View 1: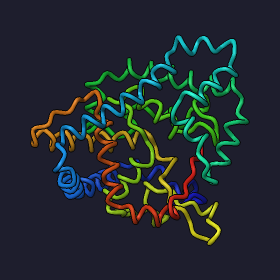
View 2 (view 1 turned 45 degrees about the vertical axis):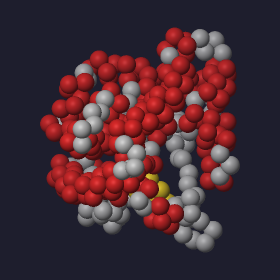
View 3 (view 1 turned 90 degrees about the vertical axis):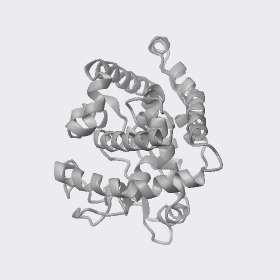
View 4 (view 1 turned 180 degrees about the vertical axis):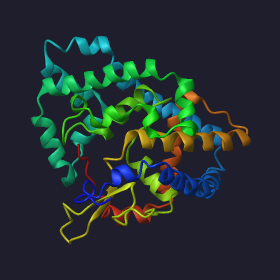
Length: 306
């Protein structure tokens, strides 16, 4: 998609249409084997089971920090001192702390916006997100969630409010990328991280096709024609406005495919960590396209809009 025109072209609605989803998945399905076989071949010296076990181990080490911080009782203690919440958020939540420490010039706007954000607003947003997810889990038991991969469109996941509800985001500060990474570390069974690896991974799995979108660009990319590089190049970033329900649909289908291939190889995956495995696979897909990514991202320049 093109950043300056993606809203007016109506592509957000087009990519949710059943025929479009079927076409995209058909291409994914034909592309998955070659990436899987390359993934398995590259890791042949290291057992596939060991590779996935390490991915889960690394995830658990990081997830403990998120679970500890976003414990509902712990958050209640910040009501009397929201500034303490903001300080702790900046220090103890990896996605926030790491982005604040990053010295890349493209992150300066986000860093400034975060520092200017009101502590009360930050606390309220994360409480709203956690309240929503608590109710969502009760309304979407795991067996129903799994059926969404084949029986329903993206709206069936019931995750659209995470994208659209004004109580659950702060413009240019807390968007779906950060929220999904937090939620993934709280529930890797049902909430995939909608970050760079996932969206770039889907872009390459789709053979970089545009599927006839009016902008002649991929739905998984956001071509930043608003802030070009000094030499006039456009950054081809991941689509940081990609619908989370639709991303969840594709991620679940990709996981199901990976799980079946792993089972054939004698490796049993833990469904409670399903999106740890898919994220590791997306990482491997991106690794096969390092040269493409360097060109697309103007040699690793990037940004994280809210």
